[in-house]
Every structure is written in C-alpha cells, then in structure tokens.
Amino acid sequence: MEVANYCVIAGVSILLLLGCLLHLIENDTFSAKTIGRFQRLIYVLIIEIVIDCVFAALEGHEIPSTILYIMKGIELILNPISAFLVFDIFYNKKVSRGDKNMNRIRKMMVLVININALLQLLAIAGYHVFIIDNNNMYRRGPLMPIYVALLLFMIVTLAIGIVVYSTKTQSIMKATLFSFTMLLVTSVALRFFFPKKNYDFLCIAISTLFLLIYYSHVTLRIDPLTKMLNRHVYARLIERIDYTTIIIIIDVNHFKQINDTYGHACGDQVLKNFASIICKAYGQYAYCFRTGGDEFCIILKPNVFEKLLEETPNCDVYSMAEGLMEKLETLIGEYNMEKGEYSLLENGVSQGYGIFYSHPSEATIDYNDMPLKEVLELADQRMYRNKEKYRIEHPGEIEPNENHKRIGVLYKPSRPILVEEEDT
Image (cartoon, rainbow, N blue to C red; front, top):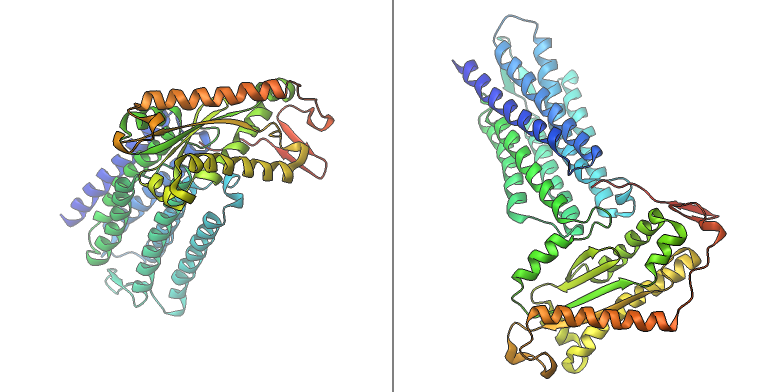
C-alpha cells in the first residue's frame, strides 16, 4: 500500500509536468531557446521522479544493493542540477556577459554542483550521504546534513538570481517568486523529515507551474528588443497612477535616417544601446518604457518625487525635472565619446516632461488642476517642440560611413560589434 501511494503521488507529479510540456508546445511567446531550456528542466525532473519511484518499488527486495546505490546516487546528483537548470532559463550568456552579479551566481551554482558530485563519490571511501542496509532499505548517512545544506544554498542562490534578472527587466512579482521559493524549500524539508514519502516531488512539480507563470509574466511585460517595459504595461500604469510624479517622453533624433542609411537591423542595435543608457540613467528610481518605435518614456516610482525634490537646491521642481533630462544627455555624451563615430547617437535625443500632482493643492500655478491626460499631452508637445527645433538647426542627413556598409553591423576595424539575437 505504501508503494501504491508513492506511485500515485509520483504519477500526479508527472502529469503536472507533462501539462507544463503541453503548454510549452503551444507557447508562441517564449523564444525557441527558452522553450528548450524549460523542456530540458522538465525532462530532468521526470527522470528524477521515475528513478525515485522505481527505487521505492525495489527497496527491501533481494536485488544487488549496488543498483540501489547507483539509482539513489543519480537522483541526489540531479537535484541541485535541476536548480541550476531553472537559473539557466533566466541566464543569457550574450546579455549577461557584462553582468557580474549573474556571472557570480552562475559560478557559485556550478561550484555547488561539483561539490555535491564529490560528496556522492565519498561513499566509495566510506563517507555516506545515504546508506543501503543489509535489508536493502534506505537510511540517511552522516553526510546528509551537508547535502541538505547544499540544496538549500542552491535554492536561495537561485531566488537571488531570479530577483537580479527580474529587477533588470522591472518585472519582479514578489508574491509569485516567494511562493515558488517556498515550495522548493518545503520540498527539501519534506524529504528531510519524511524520507519515506515523495511529497517533495509534488511540491517541485507545482513550483514548475509557478515558474512558468512567473516567466510568462516577465515576457508579457517587457519589450522583446530593448528589454524595457512595453506599451501595454505603460497603459496599465497610466490608469493606476495616484501619486505625484514626473513623466519624461524621449525620442531619438534622426532615427529614420539611421534605418534608411544602415538598415533596420542596425537601427535595432541603436535602440538596444540607447535603452541600456536610459536604464542606467533612471532604472533605480523610475519605470522605463519603450512606447513604440524610437519613443521612450520614464515615470518616477512612488515617493521618488519627494526624495529627489529634497535633494534639489531650493526644492525647485523645474530644476529637478531639467536635471533628470540633463542626466540622460550627459550619459549619451559619454557614450558618444566612447564609441566615436560608431555610436550612431551623435544626433542625441529630444525630451519633454510633465509633472502630475496627486494633490492639486501642492501643484505649481501652471500645473494647477491639470489631469494626468493633459500632463502627458504637455510632455509630448514639449518633446516634439524640441525635436522640431533640432531638425531646423540640424537639417543635414547622415553621411554613410564605409565601415557601416553591412546591414545590421556596427563595424569598428579593431572590434566588430554584431547585432545579436537575444532570448525573450
């Protein structure tokens, strides 16, 4: 009866994972690489469950104990690898190349996987994580607490890695992430306190569903090209804003000429580079959006307006708004200095701002009783006025450069910079 219950729980867990696989087959939102990584994770989990279920069925029977040692050893080696495969879903080698935090987390997880593999091999020298006794029954070994500690470390490290990724994409779902992490911790606890049960795999299967929900949420929120928040999220946020904030609308000058001269693939690379500059300038205290084409928008997060105002000389709100726009101009200037003629942002950007006051009594005279819709229109008008002024002052077209002839390539003789396809 014990084995029957074990198999039922294992069957339900596998059915949940197969449901996730079916969802992935019909999924047209994730990239092919991401779907492949999810599938790889699910296959490994199913293998673990099958091995554990077969082990439970064979336990206590007259078979060579070596078979049981090998089966359980494979399962214990795969457990931390599963956590690493989850992290790998959020890790993109091309995007994370310069991300020290993500690279450090990945290196730590690889180290733990290797330590765990060595831990299992110590059984050869008589130091066991688990023991198969003379009756072919499973018992914990003296090194089991070390194994559990390694698993918990992997889970915590995994959660930190997901937070780092989600913070960069401005898409963290705290409740869902917490539920996912707690399910994994619970699975370890259940296996530790109830070694003869397999409720842990049921928790892992459910946590995989939470992982799919979480990643789907991230994917639906971000613009696939720039990894900024998309227009849909922008529209929803505009409906909910009930706090005092500054809205800045940004447009790349002469962007159409970049597309016409070098091709749309090259224009896409320019937008990705510019999006990185915007996030560097405002990512800590503002929501950063790509609202369409070469248009971007930033909206200060709750309570940031008051904090920045206190840091502004004479608490002048106009100086604060101008300072925010100047910060972006400064970073663009630094980027142009670094890349020279290869930046393709030498024409800069046009910006316009508006201030929305949640309490009209606090508003300055020119913003008195101005609803959010009018604030957005004002910011847009200011941006287009600055854009038109720039066109009049700089009517010349971009002169093609010999180094930019290949469509989609920003080529510098010492180092070619290719447009790379990134995961969604």
